[in-house]
Length: 415
Ligand SMILES: [Zn+2]
Image (cartoon, rainbow, N blue to C red; front, side):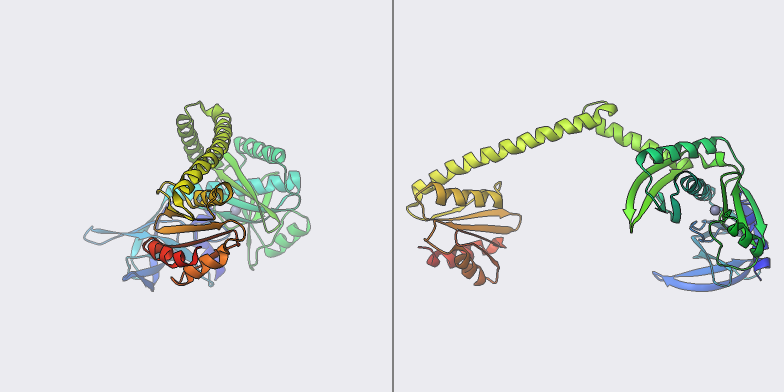
């Protein structure tokens, strides 16, 4: 069974073949998505790669041509392999069993997968060989691919050396060799330390080799020589469950990302009215300026609050009750309330700040005049709202339309 199906998978022996003819051998309805039927088609032979071994599926089309010459294009949106080893092509357009079709793989997507996947072989091999950092898993993602490494985490300098070595081997255009061995031969290779892992399957095992660099049991699609991997870029590292996760990109994707990064840097430089090499200096200067402006703002607000507190107390004849203009926030309400009771003769300050749809109330009192926490909580509770604080200062918030009700509830409680 496995033998026959292996022979029908064109991508094993001819990963560069992206057009083929085949016959529909089975069709089944998978599901209805938003009222639309989704079908899965099996073919007697296919070049469509199903998601497996960490490499994502191919997309493309099947084209069926009627005797009249009319042709029907069937887009393939997913390709999966079932437990029995059958490859299923997902589509919204059904095809009858026995229909002869020509298949066409999306070449850009496939080439991208081959570049990332082949790059991963190379990267894992160098990390293991040079720094004893062993790949425990990898993921080929839509944006970046990652490998999880166990063992001592490579330093930044070591990672740079890994990237340099990878790009050196890429430029050397070493061939990717593919051959089948029996499971006994594979077991011997593992004993000799040539293979890290044996795949969990019986029958012949496919060995992928970069001569002198890597030997791997792998069913994915690979480029013909390392040169086709194209530029390899290492990206970020992060700790994940005790391992180091290393992100990387290869080939056309690396070029596209490097170009996008360049344009983003240019945009940042233009916003900072500087040249790209000066961006960091420019950001550091802005941050320093920002810190000193913040400090200045805090000092000015302190001064403003003192002046405003004195002004409010001079006209209040007792407790200061005041609603702030909309450009002052709850933090300023707190500052102003504390200034009133500390710096003026007013015994109590009730200050409200309006932010979006909320009224933020602050109640402050001179020591011994009033228990602010209990008083404000009592008033808030009559409106089903919460809040509280210490005897000296309390805070709470109500919806804007309840601001007046809160003041009415509070007024009888104030001295
Ligand atoms: Zn592979």
